[in-house]
Length: 103
Image (cartoon, rainbow, N blue to C red; front, side, top):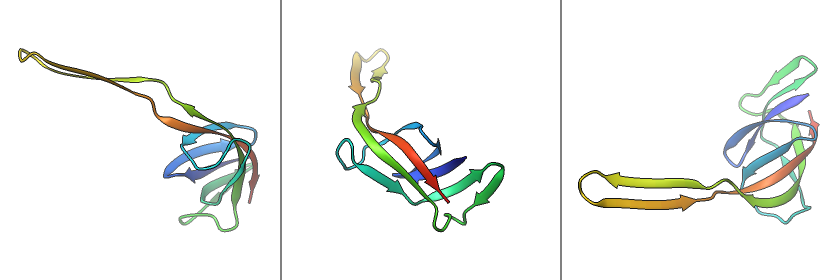
C-alpha cells in the first residue's frame, strides 16, 4: 500500500514505516501530524485517483527531528572582470515517520 501526498506544496510517494524529509514544518519532535491532501492511493493493486484529492483519505505520521540538508555551494564568476563570489546554503527539513495510511 502506498499513497502520493501533498506535504507543504511538494508531492511525496509514501508507504508505511517510511522516513520522509519534508520542508520545514511547525511542531516539536515527537508530535503527531496528519496529511489529508492525498492525491492517489494504491491498496494491493486497487488504485484510487483523486480529483484533485481523495475524500476521507489521510496519512498520519510523527515528527522525529528538524534537520539540515547537505551544503550546496553557489559560485558566481564573471571572466576577465575579477568578480568572484562564493556562498553556501543548507536547507531546513523536517524528518517525518509515516505511521499509517487510511483510505
